[in-house]
Length: 230
Length: 195
Image (cartoon, rainbow over all chains, first blue to last red):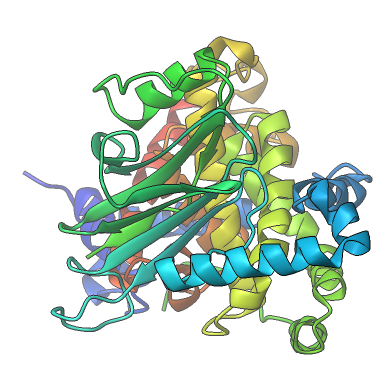
């Protein structure tokens, strides 16, 4: 049998968080009023939680240093380009050829940058949230790493895509690009692995296990933003 | 009616200043404005979501690195503050995953036993600092995504529509999540003798 306190926890809190008035039945109950007061105290304590904490005084400088570090470095041929215009023309020609073949040219990615773009599918009902049928374009910056892989996990457990094994994935200068159709609801998270050591085979234990393996293998690891498909 | 939450209004001049810099193509200035205005509160959020100080610091810095890199794609559907908290939540949740994976490489956060501490018997007045510490421990009992929602709601004062923008879920889902988390916190604080 549920007590008024159980009911308060189950019903009144949800109503209060939804911005609704408190049921008069609860207001006439002493235990409920005490509980409400306790919750208000907890809310108040949460509001001031950490108010004595301050970040490292140098954090802004450190952040700018990291931003500078992640900017793509100009490749060595850049200096030559300045004195050898012919080389520039050649590079431009290669770029045009590349554009013609692939339709889109990925922008230069910093090493470790993992860009995620959801492209709307044509057959699905539209809303702001990604839906099954939408396509996902992942682009990861891996520099000149000897080995790289781009993977996509659903709900942390299921490996739904990996570049090593699937079509729809290509390695470009300094980057790796994959295009995947999101075919089911769930929380998807991309994972970029790169380094000079070989990429370990997926463990089958999901995102946690695979990242652990990659770190053990001394690979670099970057997790992308989660994409919730509804 | 709702539980007492200090919903902070977004300072318009800060948002306007950052957006003006962005419109002028000056990402550096835009991010500098955001760092000055929101850096400390995002640090506090990360520190209580991640708990490991080193990882929290890393997630805090990475929030602004990612903001800098992604600022030109900011859709303006929410305030910059809400957008930043959305980034911070992602980075902190990722940091937590890394904590679990790296395990022994980082020192475990010191935890108090569940039994009430001797200094917290009924005759003692609970200091604000001790209460905060116990509350932080109780927060740690919540799953990370739930902890993030509770912190964004109460510590940072985000409204449910803002929270929904920041985390990409429906307001009703988040209301239910927060409402279910509060009794967990209350029971935990009771066990520790703090309420």
